[in-house]
Image (cartoon, rainbow over all chains, first blue to last red; front, side, top):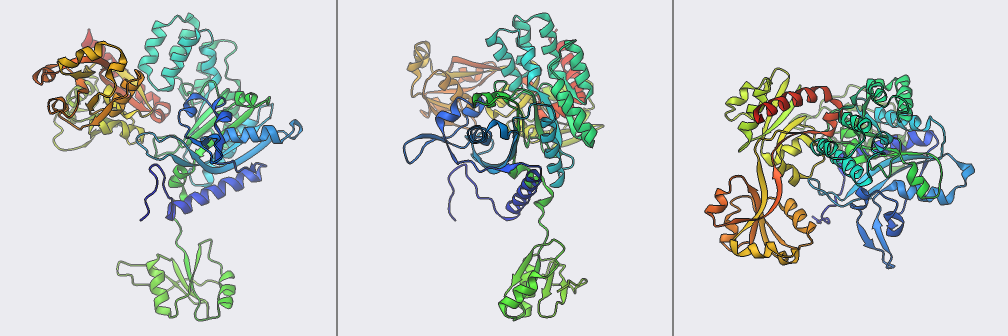
Length: 400
Length: 214
């Protein structure tokens, strides 16, 4: 067996099939809504990534030299490559721009996982100035999750501007420490900092409440009441009301302590969780600042999901057994012609080129096929494989 | 059902006592025997090796857990530290023979290429690299104090409670790394989606911790 480099993995079998199915569902849904596929380069110039990525992303970049001697990094983030491409390849009149992608990303391995490469699917919507873009992206994301069988997944919504405004009157380095404590999840350190730092009482009261602002839409009212006038929650409220009107009220939860890089995200942000898995499957949010760093003005919204994770939880994880079609000593062209006409009820079809019937049946049972069909006469056996590999007589007939 | 993971070993009894004192239905934890999972009313308790506890929470097998600060630092998993119980207090320190003390009083460069035996390779790496000192880290799983004695390492990085084990092995504290105590932690998902339940448990434990301290 060939050894792979540490941190790398081959993906095959049912998981690979499930990943391909999820990818197909994702791309076809988003393309149907006007998102165009994008295939970014695997190597990115370090100079164009470094300044534009938030520090947490930068720390995970894997730097390499290209064979031409240019300092590069393995693609750690597809959004940046997408935005840079769109900024230089499309005129302002062509906006809004919609992009979707499915590709590998690379990041420094972190315990407990050793993997340094992962598969990401994602979408970006750039240059739409009014409300609706955020809701469009999240609506499509939820639709996609439904279609792959994650109907109980939850979208956890926050807003980067809420925390940013709450620390806006705090001295810069103290604000960084406060946000840092919340970002790393240390509510103990966060509470201590709020006690220690010089913070105006009005903002201190808001900051003290932030770790408790979790729950349903009622949290938005509670948060708004803290601010009185001018609560920075308009965009998030719009998203919540639109998704609720679309029937997704029970799939969203509010978390105003949700932190993503404040220097990067600039509006509604979100994480996706499945019912039975503790870690985030991915997320995203509004990142207008990155857009301006690339010389574009306006709004940008995007997300990325871990394809391997969502595939492993999807309905495609258990692959439907295939139908085996025995060529029955017909000429190959005739056998293929007949097999092509078979209606298999959506199940995959495998050809069997065994010379004798018994070997073909045995092979079908070993491979876990649900049915076996003789292409010479269209007769079908419904295979219920038992412990001894015995096959049972057929119950259904396929049209041939 | 709220699932709480508890570390077996040194701090188990303190964590179990806190839960019972806080009024949670946890009487089965008083004499756990060999069972690893207990259910009482709306609570499930999982007993796990201390270093595995953060993983249980991170992967969603438990909503809440008690874990030592040392274990949390070493795991570096993205968990939410909700409460410092103040129990199980000890320190992570660098310790070694008295002859090494001079090197630790001087410039950080004096510590270059020390051989450091530890159960906490991540904490050791973070500690020494933050000072710009490159050291050889030797990852051991127990009896760390033996390493300098047998010439395996120059010093150790370990947790210390009273210091009597160090003394017995002719070692002394050379450098303080961090304070450790028993923390109540949760996953980001549980905090966001089960906040009402978690807050109730956290408040009950917090009130008990305060009572004990005062």
